[in-house]
Length: 93
Image 1 (cartoon, rainbow, N blue to C red):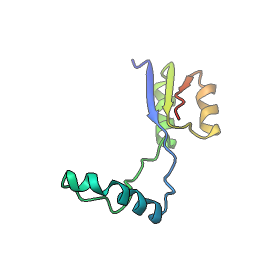
Image 2 (image 1 turned 180 degrees about the horizontal axis):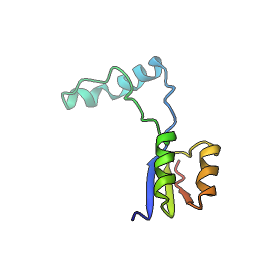
Image 3 (image 1 turned 30 degrees about the horizontal axis):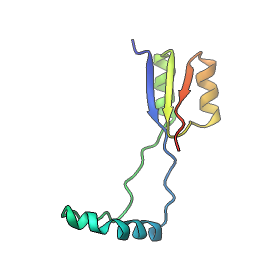
Image 4 (image 1 turned 45 degrees about the horizontal axis):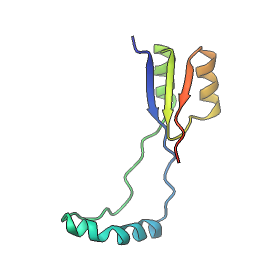
């Protein structure tokens, strides 16, 4: 039985094309040095802790669930707490 399930909860990217173009320009020497093509768009970030994952956790009921880079919405957190699951999160800067 798992004792901890761990999830990345990344916010959806809202970076504009102009910001991406500026980052690519700053990194261009590295792309050239490594013979890599620069990206044309930001890679998609997964859905984070969605309803499907919440249902899975509530079904498995591990003693601990941990989150990194963010927290699920308060309603999901409340459901985890109601199920008696301890919640841990990392804080970074």
